Length: 356
Ligand SMILES: *Cc1c(COP(=O)(O)O)cnc(C)c1O
Image (cartoon, protein in one colour):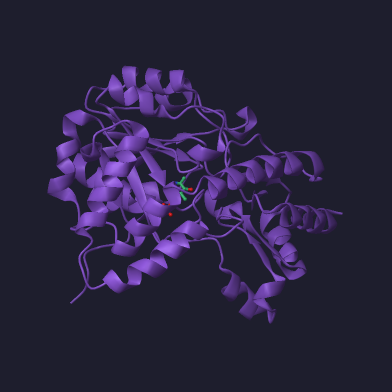
């Protein structure tokens, strides 16, 4: 026997891991700096680490209380009811839940190009068709209502990434409202704020008070440094918040993840230092890289270097792993995650050396 026809499905290609690259180059992982996956330069929130250690004794139980507590706590943070907080196994898990809740077989979705690879994957898993809107490099990847609406044709979900990965560009709240207004009543504008903490712009959260056609995605992977734990959440309108109970995998987030998330939310120091350093590093990249960069609201910067794959390869041999953007359809670019001050300076020195 065989699985169903999966030929239209693609494989997710993550940024390369430290151990993987170190082994291949015969290097010590400690001599490599990884700035390829927009992970937190300070590691996990120490409070979350402690919470996970404490929670190990409870691993034999289903995470009933912790799941409810985390939804409640996040509801308080965002001034929403706990029902409106959809926990998931990473932001990716939440993308699946939203697709599962929205798509009938054959419904189409609209995704950005370049864009986050998991949107089309998730839509296809849920028997959706995928269409694209284009962020144009000539236009500095500007994200406006027109960018999206000129390619919109009645799709059921429109994915909006703000700040956008890998370019760093952003939508204004007005643009998001215009998109929601000018698309069909049954079209969901899914605003992915995976990097929402790093921008100075407001969240689209306020729109949930007025509209039932917007959902917001947030994650603990980036600012909280919990990418390995897999924890994210959606914020959804009150009108259909109860759909979660009908579509979620029981206990979408694990006991360890929920405990870590609860603790990380209380760790202001870790979050503030992370955001502050990321904002510093963005400026440092803009000012010191010998390559054009784009304004970014995230914890990363896109740079145009000519042959992205060759530059990433050479930089890796010198000790820094950056993201070659070929898989995003930008073979002339690399994406550099914001590191600590030390790592960011080292990355600039190495990439500039490679470029000269
Ligand atoms: C990192 C990221 C996510 C979520 O990642 P998870 O680790 O699954 O939480 C979602 N969208 C974008 C654009 C991202 O870069």
